[in-house]
Structures are given as C-alpha cells and as structure tokens.
Image 1 (cartoon, one colour):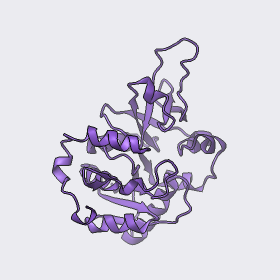
Image 2 (cartoon, one colour):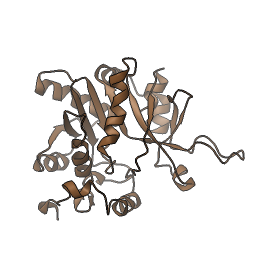
Image 3 (tube, one colour):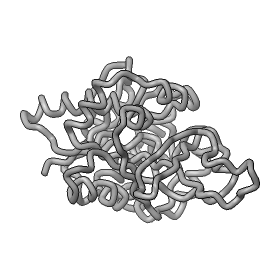
Length: 262
C-alpha cells in the first residue's frame, strides 16, 4: 500500500497573508507540519504542494520534498490532486491513498494521521475520511475561522459551516459542538473524481472543500480524535499556538531553528 501525505500551502491567504512562513519557536509553520507528518508510521512519504517559490525553497532546504503547482487553485484539495499526479509521474507508479494535511495545522500529531487513514484500509467502501474534534468553548464555536461540522448517527458528515452549527438560538445550549480537523485522507481515484467536479454553490458559500463532496451525494466518514490541536488562521491563532507548543514533546525532536531564517 503506497500512502503519501500532501501538504498544500500558499502565501496568499486572505485571512493571514504569508502564514506558512510565519515562525513558531523559530521554525516556519509549514516546517512544523512537514516534520510532524514525517513521524507518522503509516505514511510512505510527505510532499509539500505549493505555488510559491519561498515555500518550495524552504522545504528543499530542510531536506524535504516539494511540488510546484499552479497558482490558480482556490481549494487545497484541488492543489493536492495536481500534486499527486505530478508525484505519480515522477515515481512512475500510482499511489493508493493521499492524505491531505492542511499547512495551517502545526500541532498535528502523527497518531492523528494514523487514525484518519485506518478506516480506508479496513473498509473498501470508505473513499474519504476527515478528523473531527470537540469544540470546548462557545468563543471557538462562534469563531468564523473555525469550520464546524454536524454528523449523522453513523458519523458521516451532514454539513460543514463557518457558522455555529447546530444552532443554540432556541434555548438548547447543550448542543454537540464539533470542528473539522484538516487531516483528510482520500483514496486515489476518489480524489481525481473530486477534482473533476466543478465547484458547488454551498462549497463557495461556506468556503469549505468538503461541501463539494456532500453536494455530489457522497459520504465523508468522520473520525473523532482526542488530540488537542489548533489551526492557524490569524495572527492571534499563531500567538496562541506558540504558547500551546511551548512544552510540546514532538517539538523537542525536531526543533532546531533554521539559522537562515533568523
């Protein structure tokens, strides 16, 4: 089984421009994503997919593998699909599973990747999974930068939104508050199928890749993770993550800053 991780990253973020190269404990955020993904026991190799030379050059400077993609992609999943085809051409073989790990998840634990991939290996009918975690505060629940998700009774995604769903407005305060964690394994052919679909109305409205799948009538198996992580969408998030990672056990394994970046 050939399983690769692809980390899409671009400098032109609408909410936080240049965030992949912002330093966290002396290391660019994209570096944290790369180093931590490499620790997964289930991944054969890790690639960063980007349209920016500065990211490409940084990843190659630390001995990593980077793929230059088009600068026209609006969704990370589309960039991951292009990168996968380039990688297959370079290797001369087809991959089986592509794990898309967003480049703004610097607190990723390798075990999270393993638990996200496991259902695809056990069940031939599962085409895609996505990690989901509990939201612990109302403030986070109401944060428009945090993608919320509601599930059916079989742990398939019903809907993703940046709005607080399900609603707490009718006096029901104890609602299940869940967030998307952007570790998303695709079976190879399903990623290409996804890439062939046009953007869908709700995908555009919510600005969430996964809505394209739901709008095309396909299931997304959501896998609960108990690992505590924080995605970076704003400068405030970056400062919060730096505090959270102060005593991070994984950081101690790779955390020598690149002198050229200081």
